[in-house]
Amino acid sequence: MASQAKIEVYSGDYCPYCVRAKSLLKQRGLDFIEYNVQQDPDKRVEMMKRSEGGRSIPQIFINDKHVGGCDDLYAIDKKGQLDAWLEA
Image (cartoon, rainbow, N blue to C red; front, side):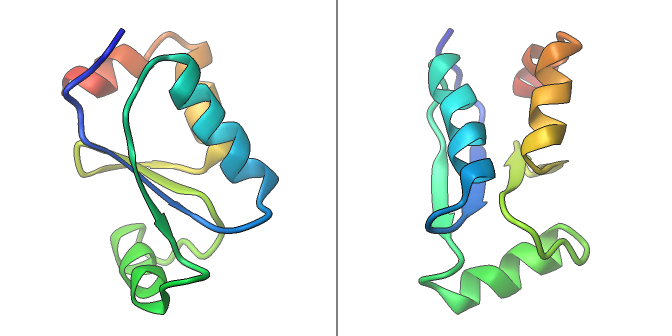
């Protein structure tokens, strides 16, 4: 199911949680914007501000609403709530 939702993933190199989160989004056929916070320090500052202090990666946003990290994304999907987030 393709979506018009704006999905943003703040990630980094060699991060297994980032790989898992992006894999789930790809499996669902969802497009996302990826920001590598290890290569762009300004994006790390932006990520921490938007996530209210979140330092770990990934930090995921759907339609400017903070999802959290990889485990949070999988939990939302497992509960069947991801579609509601995409429509919000």
